[in-house]
Image 1 (tube, rainbow, N blue to C red):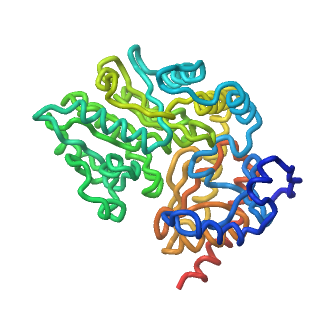
Image 2: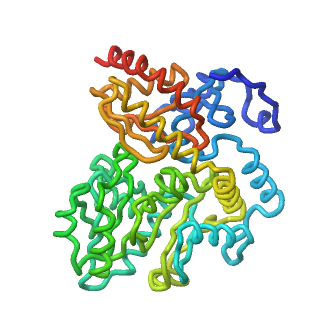
Image 3: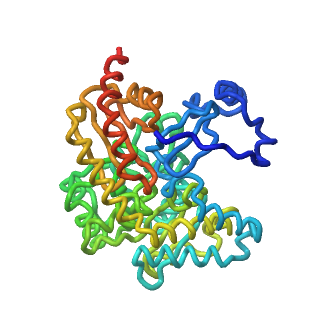
Length: 419
């Protein structure tokens, strides 16, 4: 790991008791925040590029990137400058008004998505909110005969009620039932099941091109093409959830663009990497007919598309586009996946670009996350035997190599630590 860097004092330090220990912060966390996340693993205080430091001064290589959020790493100077400039100029206006940053970001997203004339963008504050907007879009495509919405087993689309109805995990769903109705879950990647289920009674099919929370599972070859053909034939919307897989994460601007052919969706949800660390999400609607499904007063957001969030999005996309980051994603991602696949401690490697799932030979992924943290690497587990990597897209080959060299010992120690 690189040498520690000198921490500069800021006005924020006066408000947050800078200099106290991590244990101190964790104790205060447990007595002041709702316990939906459990106890945090560390109290992080600063970052630079792909490194972060905790309150006790320990350095870590961040291979999770805030769960695919910090695409340009931490404290990126251009993003920081643009956000600071916008905040010092105009921080927030209601959606009775617009701003140059809001309009410019919408136009940029439509360009990158290769969206046709009549396409539109609705801005939100998170991926869950983008999915909620997409859920309402699906309902607007309903008729008395067309009422069903299809999603897949293993899907994770968020935790608010509409998004949770689309999410497949029973443990997330059961405490909050009854959920919004009409949603059915199909076997993951089963084209025959898709053909059997999708008919004129379906209003929408909602898919993740790569299921991130299920262990980084890309849809199998041919599935998206079949989904596009069937939804078009039966008048259903094809809605792609690219909250985790979008914004360059897979080496393309959006994961569905890797497939090629005519798989352009009717709508797409984005968030996570879009703001480079600043909260922002978006629903993109493709074409005039789909965009007209939500009209004045049928949806809204007080903070959605505010000038500062939009400035963060613009700065992030500009940097990704002008500095060759997507080439880096493809190169370093391929190196990392090949290196992982060659390790005897790894049973399987999945993913695209820098969204990577690693299956171990046994159920010790949670222990491996803790051992890795002690060794100075931030990763996470999505299942008993599965690790996930979603690092900043600026990850270097040397940084990837440091993890590859460390992982065998991490796994061996995790095996020994698991009862």
